[in-house]
Length: 232
Image (cartoon, rainbow, N blue to C red; front, top):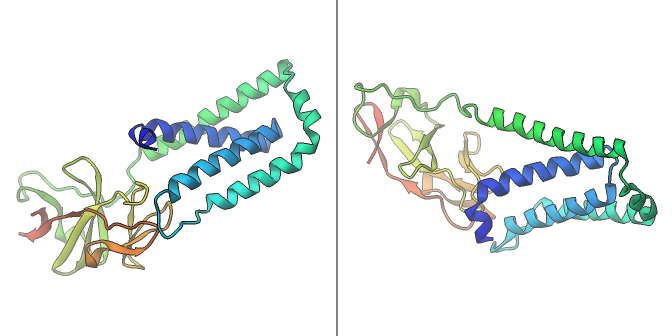
């Protein structure tokens, strides 16, 4: 697990490509049995990484995917003779495999392109020379019950929330459960993890409102000075 964390970017990119390859193989009916087994294995891995060390036990959605992939594999198993015959690749099969791989990489590239665009149009933009040192955002640009993405001194993503006219707070956006980036939900007035549903209370030092996370988010000290939110 630690090795995967150390190489999280590579593991993430590899997982995306594998998911696309499995999905395309299943969609086009090519090596369905092996695609189903691969899907079950990937779901098991994601399930374990999401629930590892979590108490009480976290029944992630990937557990349902694991059951469905296994059901598909068992339904295909009686036809293994046909599956084995598929291993004898002719020229058209080679083209299909190559096309499937190319499509996986193409979809991955498109996703990478979109992910490189700014996520939040409200990113802090402080004009040089007009704001005090350590400024994160002008208070006028941050309405009550709203948030803005920031970058912490460590380089990690952070989130700044304005709770009231004269009350702001900031935290690391890295979820303490599995490292996903949390976002502020103004309706729930909570910081929510999109991966596994953990919720944190920004009004109470980002304490856990809902698991599977067990620890609060790392708090960043900020204050209001001369109409700006600055690091304390």
